[in-house]
Structure formats: C-alpha cells, structure tokens
Length: 395
Image (cartoon, rainbow, N blue to C red; front, side, top):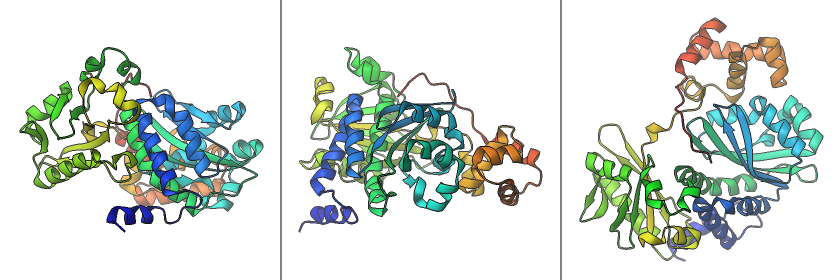
C-alpha cells in the first residue's frame, strides 16, 4: 500500500456508510462551489445525506446589520427559519461560534441533558420536531460570519462521533471554498470584466501554469512582490523569502497540479512569514478541472494561489476578549447578554438558565478578568472590541 493510500485509509477510520470515493467526490464538489456558488445547494444536500440529516445549509450572520440569512437551506419550515433568525443571539450556537476557531465542529446535543433543559431547545427546536444540529463556523470576514450546518428531526438519533468526524474532514475544505467565494465576486467573474475584478481584490491572486510559472498577477499580488518581505518571483516562479516556506510552497504547487489533485485530500494552505512577525497565508486551488477551468480558461492556468494577510480580517465582537481571558461558552453568553443592557433576571430569561447560574458565571468572569463590578467589566469589554471595517461585498 502506498503512503498516500494509507493516509486515505486512516482518514476513513471512524466513518460509517461513507466510502473513500464518496468522500473524494464530496470534497471535489466543495471546491467546485468556490467558483460556482450555484452548486452549493446540491453540495449542502450531499453533505447532509452523508450524515443522515434531514435539513441543512449555510447561515450568514451579519454583525453590522444584526441579522441572519439562510443560504441554500433545505428541510426546514419557513417558520422555524424565522424564529431561528430572531433567536439566534441567545442560542448555544452564537456563543460557541465566537470562541471557536473557524472550522471547529460542534453539535447541540454534545451534552444532551443541557440541550433538553435549555429554553432555546424548548421554544425553538422542539416545536418543529428538531432534535440536534451539527455545524462549524466556516468564514469570518468584516462584520460577517458564515457557518455550514445540518440537522436531524425526532425520527433520528443525536449525531454520533462518526458524524462529527465526517464534518471535521470536510470543514477545512468548506472553509477554504467559502473564503475564495468571498474574495472573488462570482457574478463579476462571469462577466467580461474578469481582470478588472481580480485587480480590485485586497488578496493577492497568482495564477500559475503547470510548470509553476506565473501567468497572471492581480494588482495586490504585484504590490506583495514589490514589497519583497515575504514573497517574490524567482525566474518567473512564485517563491517565498523564508527557506522553509519556499520549499513548502513549491511542494504544494506541485501537489496541486498532480493527477491526484482532484481529490484535494491534503492541506493546501501555507504560512509565508516575513521574518518580522508578519506575513501571509497562501491558499492554493487547482483550477484545471470542473467549472473553475472554464471561468479562468483565458489565463491558461493550472493553479490559483490566494495570498492574504491574516491580520486584515478583524475579530468578531467578544472573540478577542473571550480568548484573552479564557471564558467558556456559557460565560461569554452571559457577558454578551449583560452587554446588551439586560439585568441578571432578564439575562437568565433570555438564555433559559436560572438567575443564580447567571450570578455564578458573572463571579467567574470577574475572577478571570480581575474586575469586581459589572460596569468595570463591560467597560473592559467595550474597549477590547475592534472596530469593524465597512465592506460592500456579500456572500
């Protein structure tokens, strides 16, 4: 058995009812969605089918407009989606997403008793026959966050470890595809203004031929090369200044053009440091196959490399504060409720917990943050929340 085949066999450990070929097909479909979002509805259904789910889709949480949009959803009653949108801020998912990393998989029934006792379950899920939801935050950019989710009704058991494992295998690919879709205005890509659109991106876009030669750079990529701190061109090939990153980037570009690249079962992101504490993250996408090959055909390219400064993506409100002070999801939910001007009793009612539990969480937050009064705590939170940049793009 080859090393590659062995790795695939390891990847399949813990999955039930999903073959290696099916997993490869799903991953390939996810990457086709990167440049053709109209494929997401079918892909979301395929992902849901692989874990015996009755509903699913992608939810976008707009923190600036304080609204939630369900994209490509299926299997839900309209009344449920309306209630989920209006009550999302008090759901276990909201706080969990803030303290989770992009790609971290969660399920509501990870602790079944806590779910069943929650007000969110009783008032939002149970009336519509839903028993569990599984999801992961897949994109954070500007004032928005997107997550991919699936759900089960009362005819199915809670999600099990093999379901979580499947989502963990798929989550990095979904995150990467959504990030690329967010960077590229797909509707403009389908117009004849392709180069103008690419030049308007803040991320650097390098298109390379199969032999590694750069056949196109957008304006941001040209600026990155001119700066010369992290990335440069060597004999018209993309090269990192850092030796270790240079070797890793070359290896990933070669892997992305290999015959097996369609399965995309390995990591295709590379850190490109600048030696001064900064740098870029390079994301690679093969573009020779599927819908993306037709869209970028004028460039005769095999690989797209997206070069992004991770510092340019702001944190969600509360995220930096929670991570800095080690707050749990429950503690953060209480803090966010209090930050909306609610007192302990109203916070307890909104969150579906008792008032003593709110007080216990608050005392733990005081201890972790070194504060003793609620006003001082909220002032500290508001000072730590970064401003959100204005962005006009929509997913």
